[in-house]
Length: 378
Image 1 (cartoon, rainbow, N blue to C red):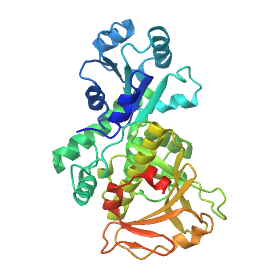
Image 2 (tube, rainbow, N blue to C red):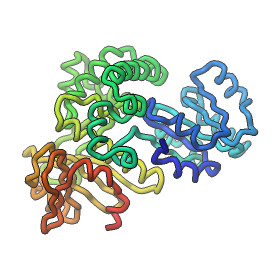
Image 3 (tube, one colour):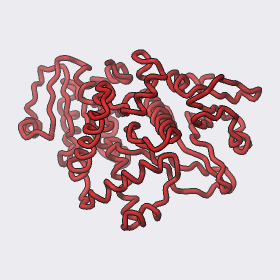
Image 4 (spheres, one colour):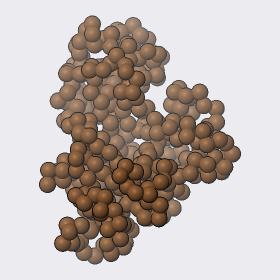
């Protein structure tokens, strides 16, 4: 299946080193091998491949060099810089990894100006729209998540076994490679607690009390899980909003099948994943400035998602079945008078547009046609 960022990556191959990151088993290696059939593939996790990488003895007659998990090599960024500066991109190089390679942006690293970074997300309704009807795609995302292998297998037992193995690899291999963490069991407990708190701001103190550790440890572990693409935060927006005091973020899972405690939490997690995927695409392909937040004031009134793309703003509410307009739109309208207001409803009889252009849309259909770039131009 052709992936949504394939053509964009092909355009940049040979211009810069391509960094391709994303959750483990989201399809990074498969996508990389689809870019050009004449490739040399080296995985730093394998001893034989490590030797070839360290010797720099890969086949330079190939049309593409794929380096997988090379971020586990000491001084990997300087290693790539040396190759780029001495040999150029002959052949073109794509570097894949299941940890956040974009952290190099924060370190003033010498790779600056030598790479383009792309983030590959699991399937969402939009990417599946040419394969499945939106309603069917939504049901499968709820049941099996959007990772390719369990999604196409369509088996409850397979997904449960795949998920257990997936988590074990992340915690007992990737995590240990990146962080000196000894409290794996506590991190597993943290993941279980977060599953039941999707859609709600989390309290570091409350989580620390439940796991019997310090709030500082909770913050550190959450950052690790974020770096390993297990979860991602949606933080509160507070600038220019009176009495907005909440600082704790909400957390969502890349694996949407993990959330099974309520339909409301499921569709909010699926929507969060779709929105973040769209924003990352705009950033990685077009260089757009984007952000995703939620809004909540002191009185507890809330907007699920506040999206910004360049100077355009969007207020998005997600509901299971309530097609009456959320009163939160009116509460926050004075702070964002130009923002486009959209309420997404899973089970709805009729879509609506109000005189002030506020829209109520069927969630699966709207996500299938999601195009933030087009909305920005409207």
